[in-house]
Amino acid sequence: MTKVFVSMDSAALSMGANEVAAAISEHAAKAGHDVTIVRNGSRGMLWLEPLVEVETEAGRVGYANVSADQIPELLASGFLSGSSHDSCLGLVEELDFLKNQTRITFARVGVTDPLSLADYEAHGGLKGLRNAIAMTPANIVNEVTESGLRGRGGAGFPAGIKWNTVLNTESDQKYVCCNADEGDSGTFADRMLMEGDPFTLIEGMIIAGIAVGATEGLIYVRSEYPHAIDVLNQAIAIANENKLLGSSVLGSKFAFNLEVRVGAGSYVCGEETAMLESLEGKRGMVRAKPPIPALVGLFGKPTVINNVMTLSAVPMILADGASSYQSFGMDRSRGTQVFQLAGNILRGGIVELPFGITLGDLVNTVGGGTHSGRPIKTVQIGGPLGAYLGEESFDVPMGYESLAEAGGMLGHGGIVVFDDTVNMAKQARFAMEFCAEESCGKCTPCRIGSTRGVEVIDRIVAGEDQAKNLELLEDLCEVMTDGSLCAMGGLTPLPVRSALKLFPADFGIKVEVK
Image (tube, rainbow, N blue to C red):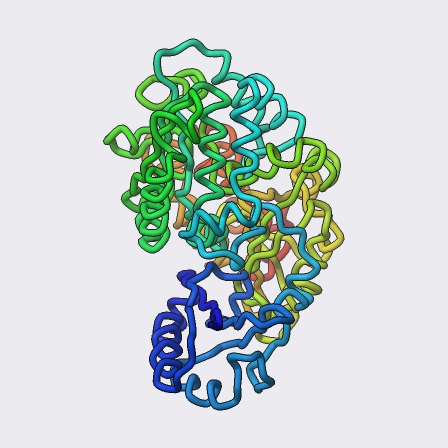
């Protein structure tokens, strides 16, 4: 029997992976080949999808950009034994793109069957949970704190401090909420993890529950991720059947239940308190803080809120120890970051590496530069509210503090590349327009400021009293930054200011930009 792996990641499905899998099954059966097709997650090399891997004695051999109508030809060429072909990549594990990564969170994605608990455990899964069950809650929290793990959702707040607050708050009920409302442009790591290795997230949430005394967990997933929602629900059902969830986790004294909740498509619900409002059945609007959710969260109870990448790093920390995770990274940015390369880039996909790689190495060495072959004009990091950085920032190491010093932010690790044909005035206008569209409307600086921002940028581009309107735009940005309730309005000025500073010519500016 030959195992053939065909990705069931959404990106692969959009390129015809289901049709490829069906064609392999049909034509292999006709030819009398004994084939088992495993629908795995994506390896993250999205430019090669659909990627088909064949298990051989030497390892898994990959075939790139396979289409359904190619299958008879591939079978005739002997690809089930890893034979040479124009689409053959050789051993997948030996490809530079994969070989040079440090995969911790994504260690199993693309390798295992996402819905096989046995496969998950055979590749190191559940070791962290078993260790956690044998520890005191305070020791679990201490391990996470000592690892240096920080929130991968944008703010970079130390996870251990948040967990410790919930642990030490008395309550008859506590919750663990996973924010999987991944709405930033150029980000897709959460989706790929949920589709390609859901048990890692489930294990991380159970550990968090044991650590803080929470018995209920909810995963808030954006409605635009129907495949991830389906895979998660299947994985949770399997976890319940195998006593991984329920009243006695793996036969222990700990109870933990988990369910998926689907968002209604609001970008602002990526903000933790707006997400809580949505989970409670209300309109997704930002809450004023304090009180913080760790004290007064879901239904007024103490709540741990982390995103997918944060919670999915926890099993490795508990399995191998805080010092192992702490050994990766730089300064206060410890461990690895899952970078997502998108936009006008030759090799788009996910790359997991320790903090510290430079922006230039990520974009040019790993990503291969622009897809168009034209010069890079700018890179936006951290989603639609992230700053634009030019080539003068390509030597900046990727870390929370180092990027902040360069005028940017890491956010969720999304990196969108633009070549020299982009108009940055249009990009700046889009930032304000996006904020106006997605604002929850609760605070005036965000609700009104973004609308006025579009108007002022239009006047600047039209050449109307530019000096006065530039001053007005700066005042507006200052009010939005300092006066908005959340990052929606508070960060919108970042892309606007950076575009204006780096590329004033795109705005048709004839006066000095302060």
